[in-house]
Length: 452
Image (cartoon, rainbow, N blue to C red; front, side, top):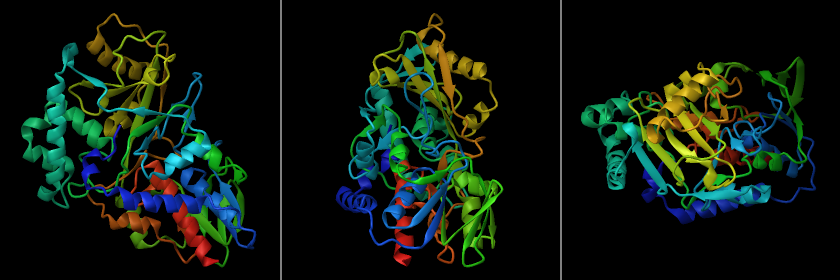
């Protein structure tokens, strides 16, 4: 499942590879025997916070991680209630060549499987199998449009507004709705809010795509080894007005020389953490105007499979962003007849107000149209609700209409050399990705280490 696949031809692999190898090597350096008296509090035990804490501890700092949940990992969350790993957040290593997650996953014991986008079958309404050449040509046409559309957009216009104006016949075409949903909305955000000038921003690693088999949470578990982490400690205030930074959490106040905030952009948007003094106007504007997408995932299991033996099944309903892409889990877990599907953007948010039975019914309506009314009902269904999750309030950041790319840098700017920020939303080149979050944690650790 490619992210920003339409940008691949513009990427230069070797510089990226060398940069990330150096970055990863710096993250895994041997412990520094020159201990320092400086103390650090990391807010959030997601991959950004854990990467930073691990490097800072190795450099001799006293580090404490405060995590609001009863588990580490943040949006790297794996559900094993059905006896196998269902990754509720990140599932893929997007481009293994030069990606720091590739080596990290190997060290963490993550097992992976190469997914191939071309191993697919596409259904239209009525169970009609779409001609592969039509599918391929539409995909190629999409890449051509994506390569030129921003030259016809405006700062005040959304991607959807410009696309619908330029290609009105495609706007209501079911196959085009599918491609816009799974190739653009999934990778970025709501098309009616996505910037028509910035939709193709961000870099991508080359190489194949690999999905985690035994759980993406193997990475945070690996990074957390030996760290001091306090769970169920929700931070609600950070006062950086004095020499020491004071962090208020669950009725306690902890002090440190430096504080690194790694909570998701959605949490910053919610204003559930009070900063004293208030953050700068630039940072507050960046928080407010940078977009936050919502993608929800749904896993259904059966006692036996009834679908085609391909990696991906696509379906083109009339409604956009709705259960139109299915990942065949059985391809990499042969004894597990299961499908994973998705809801994006506003429809994803709508699903959070639907019951399990309602969601299952909507998914089965599509599958029955594809394979007939005689298919069996699922034995289990697992789901996510990222928008209403108070620890994220969404899935990942994207450039909305009012977003400026500078905002991603503004979100990363430290304050008074005491208050630091990390997370995927602070990585201008790799926002919205797990590797971007990891890289941001290493970046901020390096800033703190440079201060001595």
